[in-house]
Amino acid sequence: MATEPVPYRVALVSFPGIRAFDVSVITEVWGTDRTERGVPAFDLRRVAADTTPVPMRGGLSLSPDRTLAWLARADLILVPGLDDHLTRAPEPVLEALRRAHVRGTTIAALCGGAFTLAQAGLLDGRRAVTHWDLVNLLRAHYPHVTVEPDALFIEDGNIWTAAGTAAGIDLCLHLVRTAHGAEAAATIARSMVTAPFRTGTQAQFIEHPTPRTDRDADALASVRAYALQHLHEPLAVADLAAHAGMSSRSFARHFAAATGATPLRWLLDQRIAAAQKLLEHTDLPMPEVARRTGFGSEITMRQHFASRLATSPRAYRTSFAAQAGARFDLGN
Image (cartoon, rainbow, N blue to C red; front, side, top):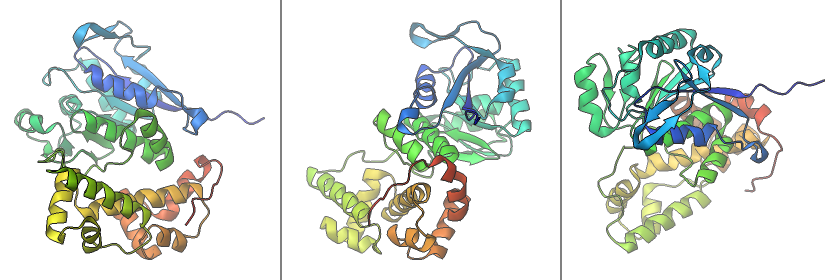
């Protein structure tokens, strides 16, 4: 008789001083049962040095249900940010994180959680990111860490760090996408009513959060919708600018101000996301996947997968074929 698959085991590391927001994000992504919507089963555990309630700001507390020994079973370990960014984690927590890293377990820190990883020595000689307002503080206290000032999230040596607040959501969804596929991440994003795909290389903040006029907002929204409907076509910045009724230079400037990404980077992100979905849910030949998503050729698609996802389209399909579920026709 077939046995049930083992749920993906996720550990939320808790100790006094962790941020309630990051705890909520982690719990929403991995602690909600969405198996009826096709999302894999997750086993989220709140792990601490002991099972004493962990105090958080605002009169909240977190009740751990496992001790640090459970980290040896985890597939993913998550470290929330801190209310006081220089709060030192208890030494048993730091030592448990060191042992987990030696075992090869993926470890991810949200926002100021990078300070906890730095305390454990896990970021020495590595690239890391934190909230843009904490960059200088992290550099000053941990000079052996290469702090990146702009990215939303980055990975170095199987250790992930994320920028502030909403970037923690982006990282969590990216980790789901990496382990379980683009559709699982998109399903979770839809239920959270959040953007399903922001790459780690996107800027942390933009100079003009909204376009300067309603006309620009309408034009840029329209051009993004147009691009998504015409991904199979060889779109250029000039084509998108013409659709928006702007010059190429003006369009590129307004687009970056509104989205935090250049038009070509945004377009590449959407093509990769579309290709991931086709690879997960169809048996289309590689050249057809490349055609439908605008890469033009399998070679070009393979090059972009290698540079952005560190894998090939074929390896990606193999990894997620078992998780894809029922096949369906995505149309032309």
